[in-house]
Length: 427
Image (tube, rainbow, N blue to C red; front, top):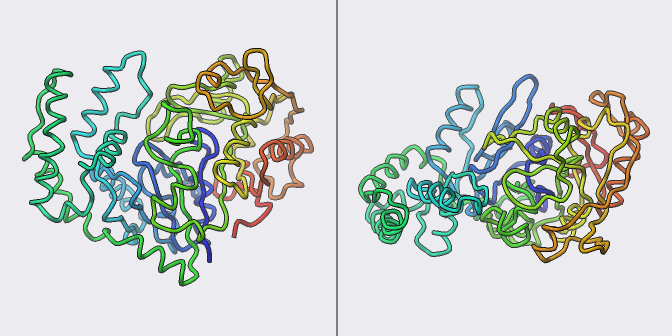
């Protein structure tokens, strides 16, 4: 069975956890392929709500093997804390696999992240301060610490020394902070080794063998398309590639193995942190979306910025990811509006623009061009089929599908696992 990729088609927080969990009972492996504990998924199972930050959503599905791929950066303390929390709630986490090639978020990465963001002041990017960016920078600069390094104290010490040679100069001379002791870092990291070792594996081999054996493998992005380091609203982006191509490099599978790419779309638009956001609302509608939708970051705890649906962004996500399907989430949040604006284009310097401008400056100055669609007042949370939706809700979904460039194959009508309308099967 070829692999599936499931990713965010906006700025993240679209409800990927719900979508992954929906498929979790039908797939054999769920793989996180990028990011770290700077992202979060909320999954509701019955009357239980689970907030996952680093672990793949598939860890909540008993028959599924969750995998943290080589493209993920791992904070060992967060990992162990999250595992412990799930175990206390009766969730079996023993099947988890972690790539030995995944990079470790060290204490000095977290320190550098926080002091750098504070130093930037009004130019800050909106980082979560969890060391993600500095860890990816170390990876590219070839001074990173990998999971496998925890099992060779000599190599670990050498690598920490090499990394701190430069970082301590920056911390002490530029930021007026104390130098970080090599021995202290090494001791802390070695303390995680035995606890993590049962999960460490050659995940590239495991996943490719699984695909050869006709197993179903789902690759799960941590953030959204517009936060991609190459294809997002740079520099207000994450430090990795949540777009579909990142699944190949972040998990070690070839593109010919992937048959479907599913984009998660919220029925409106949100983003966390700094950066341009053409449809952002600063009025009562924006506050209502935030309140009704519970728009607060799972990992950061920050209020999300809210705005109307942006079809330009959706078309862009379809193009750069090669999307085959959409999963539309939180349609129920829009219940109660008499009219619902949808951004169909931008106005930039007096000209109508149908596609996302490649120039960051142009995008920053883009003004939304809206079309207004009739709303609905009926409660849709009990809808089990598309025909159960009010006519105006059906028309809203059809309009978004036409504007976005790929079929909407599932619709979230509430937060619960069973509050989903499946139009076309993803498998």
